[in-house]
Amino acid sequence: MSWAIGAGRSPTVGSSPIDVGPLLRERLHQRVPCMVMTSATLTTGGDFAFLKRRLGIEREVSEDIVESPFRYQEQAVLYAPAHLPDPRDAEFPDAAAREILELIRISKGGAFVLSTSLRMMRLLSKRVGDELEQEWFVQGDAPKQTLLDRFRDQGDAVLFATASFWEGVDVPGSALRLVVIDKLPFDVPSDPVVAARCERIDEAGESSFMRYLVPAAALSLKQGFGRLIRTRQDRGVVAILDSRLRRKGYGKLFLRSLPPARICDSLEEVQEFLISTGQGPTITALSTP
Image 1 (cartoon, rainbow, N blue to C red):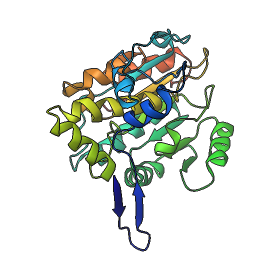
Image 2: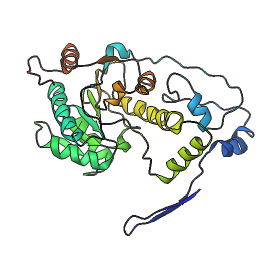
Image 3: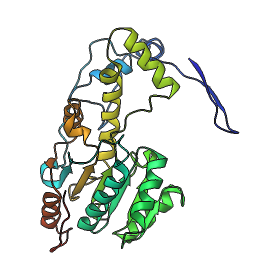
Image 4: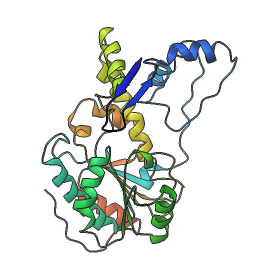
């Protein structure tokens, strides 16, 4: 499909396939006798069905899910609060900012705050940054590698960022002990390619939300989670502030797609875990809802 987006003085015109499967079958699968595909983020909900549909893999293939060398039950906890407002609610930014401040205070810094949009990144950095005791950085203030180097060197800094820091970023060690994700990373429904893909699935009598949007977001969320544990010595917390993860039925697919870390429901549990790893305060007063 061809598409155009008018954005001030920089309109964009492009052409993208709605479904890459037929192209890959014709130009790759039918021409290459053997392929090996490997990644830490190929499965959703514990299987390869979504990936195979997207890549047009229809023939029988050998599949294997290899157990991670990391001991997620010991090395990480997932804080998934159900008490926060729906991310689409007008009260969410303030509630999220309060939760982030509490989490950073408990972890004593060493945090990535990853947002699904530039708007939310800027909003959270403004509401949280000035309240921090630690040095903090915002994506765009300096080149990506410069920000990462400064973050590592500080040891207790806070970095506010978006999608470009969700993958391909490696900060092993205690400099990164908390990853906060504001929302489930659903594709923007107004994007012309996303809208066209959803329309085609719906016209076929299937649910584009469950067949495309949810598994695609689950893959992205897994990549964001993966920023935390990079070695067998790393310890830390991933906090996902989107209450739909616990309240909605589709949240179970997200949870099945993530590494098997222990799930925490309260800030007290987060604090206890960090204290046990030597990364949290020994005494603190928590403000819980």
